Image 1 (cartoon, rainbow, N blue to C red):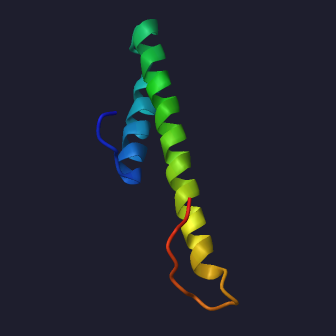
Image 2 (image 1 turned 120 degrees about the horizontal axis):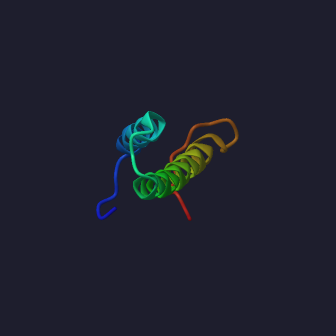
Length: 73
């Protein structure tokens, strides 16, 4: 993937891949390529969710007060 997709775009693409694989109308080689693409999308989605979770934790972990701090990797 050349450009970074938004989370929603990745989920939509993943749904399309699942639908295509479930149809059973693809040759084995193409199915394998789609499966590999799906695995990459899942990894990218998981990474985005982890980053978002860390950002949220930064916001809520200040003595019960919501304060905005820069996210540090």
